[in-house]
Length: 227
Image (cartoon, rainbow, N blue to C red; front, side):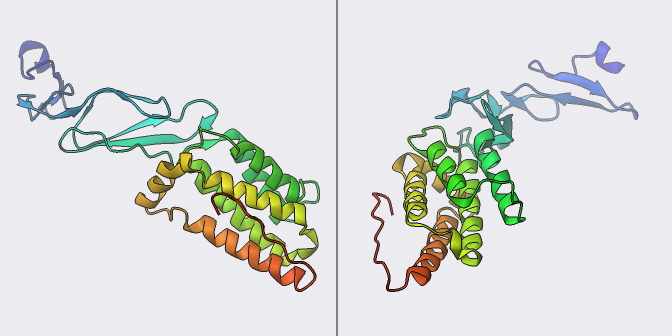
């Protein structure tokens, strides 16, 4: 291997030789170019709001890390061309507890009689999201999907509607729209994933179904801080 006999790569770069005998370099973060002689901007090590530690990364690079804690999936963060971190993307991170809610909702839609009823599913999700400062954008995205699925379900199963369920639905939406989740909603919007629009659609469809069912029999307003 010719790499053993030459200082082909500069500034700490690693040399390798392909099957054709050509040499190439893998440069350390601060350097770039064919032989690592050009200085490169880089993003410094940084810990974000969710305590994920992003290591020093070359500019114009998309870094990826496994989601931490009870989360599955991967988070990503772009180091821009001027060596500055952009906001991280957690839309693929999903907590195990909300993943379970998603699975229960799928069973409900499939007609599985062994799954929890609508009100229990909503109540469980409301408990998970209440006063939760660790919700990732993936949690918000999945919760919105769950609420849309439930709104469609109750439209075809109006016998499952109740005043208590409406109150829980409202509290759950209020949790998701809390100011502490503002950055995560912006993240979804910036990623082209719809932002809060999906949640608004769920609220609209569920409310319309409820109003159609109660008709003139009952007038009820659910007042929440964020909706």
